[in-house]
Amino acid sequence: MSYMDSHIDGLRAWIGELERKLQLRTRVGLVLAALALGAAGAGIYLAVDAADNSADEGDVQKLQGQVDQLTGETSQAAQLSSRVSAAQSLAADASTEVAQLQAQVKSLQAQVSSLQQGSTGGSTGTTPPSGTTPPAGPTTGSGTTGPSKAK
Image (tube, rainbow, N blue to C red):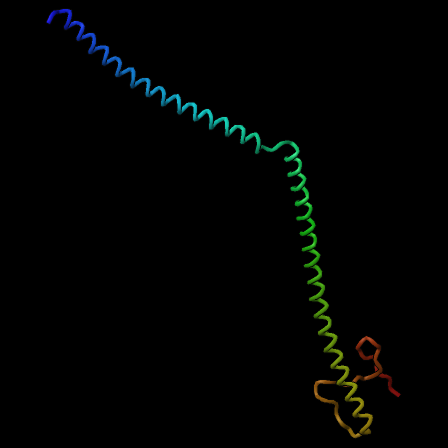
């Protein structure tokens, strides 16, 4: 083999090695280009989707109106709640007063019954039922007895 043949064989080996490196770099470059193209496509899709789904000024004003309406309804509900509480308080007071009036009616009925028994049986000295006291004089209409007048 001559010097020239060995020199050409060396150049061929060097060119083969260079070709393998170039193929590897080309493949890596193509993969990176494909990834960049995919990322760009995804970015474009997301931008279009965001533009379609974004709110415009009219949407914002519409939502603001709904929030204002709900705020007004909430304050009305609070007013109604306070009115209901006041009505419940008045109802409880009225219930207590009704119970007191019923007790007074029962007491007055017992007194009337006692007086009726005393007037039908004559003046036999019967005493009124226990727990009741006959009025000492004419009533004033307010549930209290007035002063008795001596004859």
